Image (cartoon, rainbow, N blue to C red; front, top):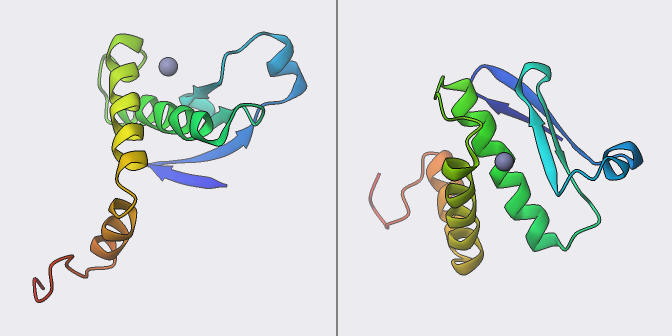
Length: 109
Ligand SMILES: [Zn+2]
């Protein structure tokens, strides 16, 4: 999978055996290589949290935020965003509709 974050296209892939052997927790991001890696051996919810966490790192990096690699900043943002998505199943369809230019309130166009 690929994601465009800022001006960079990131490749999203699962962790390799080498990553697992190095004891990398659940994922990482390499902004200069346009790479986000997420463990496939953890539950799907944890994969979602990790993917969002790494996307936030990448987004902050792409937009020049000095704290892009500060876990004290990224950690709570990732957890909050994951919880919002997990707790509100109707949110993603609304976001997709808004992305396509449709309002989520009838007649809001
Ligand atoms: Zn992190």
